[in-house]
Each structure stands twice: as structure tokens, then as C-alpha cells.
Image (cartoon, rainbow, N blue to C red; front, top):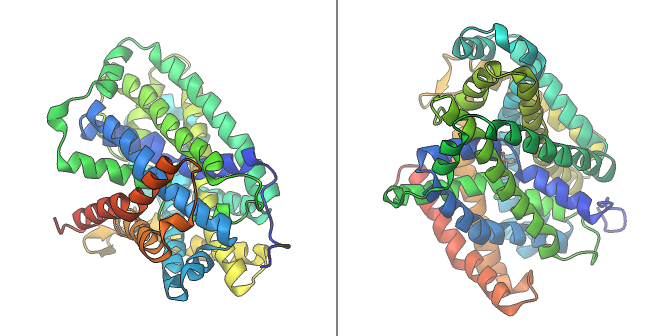
Length: 438
Ligand code: PHE
């Protein structure tokens, strides 16, 4: 697509909210609290903050700068560094394509819980209710289809009329609702104990493992390694704004929402003495159980699931947009055709992934059902790999000094050091760890 005909964002705040929408998702609201719980509370929080503002920030800035410079999808952007590197962009697009179907299955569950929230109080056993629902053959599929088609509709309408408008409504709403929910939870009896656990560092828990888990969380939460910021950056109008003006708020918002999520989940969980490190069960079993037992709980449960839906939807549309931009830029499809083609593929793959909790639960690859296999492949292998190759391409082949993201010399030098040394070395560690090499 030539620069004159390429779509663009309508405003600075629009692109910032869309990028923040991609970053803020289930990773902040669900994965962050239980990772923190499993890794020693305050200690984990501290490392998470340091990693976010160093490695995470450097990668986000590098990706966005590359997109803004090349005005192209990830394959075109890496191809600009060197035609041999196009495959890195291909890998980014592939990763997005792998994540979208299973992320949308979870999106469908959230949608279903919104619909069912008013019957929460009639549920006797929340665990059975969740497993009955997720393993049933029809209901989760219907909600998954609605969720995916809804996300596809936003992308279908394009950058300004679809993604930007949607993010401008969703993100402020999500923020306000989260504040309301946090306010309610902080009034619970033992809220203070949860807050203490969240903030008080326990340095005896500081191990190599904690460090690696914190870095893994940062990569997932900030959405790096799959070309999202390259894609979004490619729609920024020339010379209207600098990378750091755009991306500082994104990192800041991502961290802020994680903190607010911690301040909501920990007080709730501590007040009700339920296990915090429940993993996926936390949002679909533990928290609904809590909401069912407080006054006006259904109302707060509804708020909670709407927050989750908004956060998940803005992340899903960014994944879809990566693939759609690639199809438009590389094989010159129209946006509408690209959305229809790729959504159809996702509907098929997602159907299989959804059924892997029920009818297809016997079908396992490497001992894992399809859903877990997709999640493992994406979060533990493809994302770190994408992040690592991005660092190599920018830090070693292009040269990070070619991407000027800070006017301040010391900051620019630290950015270059992060992209060239700190980030790739850390990612390599995570990668080896996740495939059990160390
Ligand atoms: N960053 C998102 C979150 O926090 C997760 C995500 C991963 C979104 C990959 C898009 C792509 O949930």
C-alpha cells in the first residue's frame, strides 16, 4: 500500500488507547495477580516493575519505531531491515494467528458469564458449574462465535472507524469500572491483609525462577514479540508524534492496570480465605464465588466481567489487525476480504480448541489438550522467540542507533543497551527455561 492511500489514526489519544488496549488484557487482570501470588507478592511486583520499564519498554519502543518508520506490516518492516529477515515478521504474524483462536475461546467464556451473572447466586458448586459449561459441546461455541465475530466487526470497519473508536470507548470505561470495583473490594473486612501481601517484599522468595517468571509476565502483558506495535505504529501519520510520546503512556497504563487488578483481587481473595494461586480458575470460579456472597454481588460481578470483556476484546482486535494488515500489505487484499478470510480460519481452529475441553478432550498432543498446547506454544515458545529475533534484527543487524526514540542521549544509550544486550539475554533465559533446557 502506498503511503498516500494508507489508513491512519485520527488522533494521538486514539492510537495510544488502541495500543494500551492491546497491552491491557487478561494478562493484567487474571495472570498478573496469580503470578504475583505464586512468586512471593511484593518481591515479584518489584521485579515486574523494573522489567516493565527496562526490557519491556525498550522492546515496545523498538517495535513502534520500526512500524512508524517503515509504514508496513511486520513482514514488510523486517524486510526493510534486510530481505532475509522477512521471516521474523512472518513469525510474528503466525504467533498472532495462533493466539487469536484460543484467546477468543476465553473471550467467549467471559461473554457467557456476563449473560449468566444474574444466576450466580443459584450456583451451588462453582467449580462444577465452570467445568460443565466449558466442556459442553454447544454453549461455549456459540459465545465464542459471537465474541470473535464482534471483534472481527471492529477490525472490518478499519483503523479510525473501527479500532480507534472502539478503544476510545472501551479503555476509559474499563478504567472507571475497575476503580469502582476496587473501591468496593477495599471496603471488605480483611482487605488490608491482601494489600500487605501485594506490596510487602519477601526477599527470601527472590530466586532465578521469580526473575524469569516476572520477565515472562512482562512480555505477555505488554504484548511484545508479535508485531502489534509495528502494525499499529505503521498507521501513525508521518511526523505527527514521537515514539516516546506515544508509547510511554502505553507502558504506564499497562502497569497501572496490573496494579489496580492486584489491589482488587488480593483484598477480595484474602477477605474470603480462598486460594489465590488458582490459575485459570481464579476468574471463573474463585471470584464469581466471592461475588455471589457479597451484597449486590451480582452487580459487582457484572462490572467485573464487563471489565474483562473490554480488556480481552481490545487485545483480540489487535491480534486480528496484525494478520489483516499483513494480508492487505503483502498480498494486496482489501481489508474487508482479509477480515472475512482470516476470521473464517479462526472460527474453524477456535471450534477445535473450544471442543478440546469436552468432545475432543481425548485428543492430545504431547500430553496436552489443544487449548493448552496452543497456549504453551504461543506464550512459552513463539512470543519469546519473536521478541528475541526482534532484538537481534534491530540490535545487531539494523543497529539500534538507527532508531532514535529518545532525544536525551543517556536515555537513548540505555535503550540501545537494552535492545542489544539486556533484552535478548533475558529472553534467551526465558526461552531455555520454558523448553526445559535450564
Ligand atoms: N497483553 C495481553 C494481556 O495482557 C495479552 C496479549 C498477548 C494480547 C498477546 C495480545 C497478544 O492480556
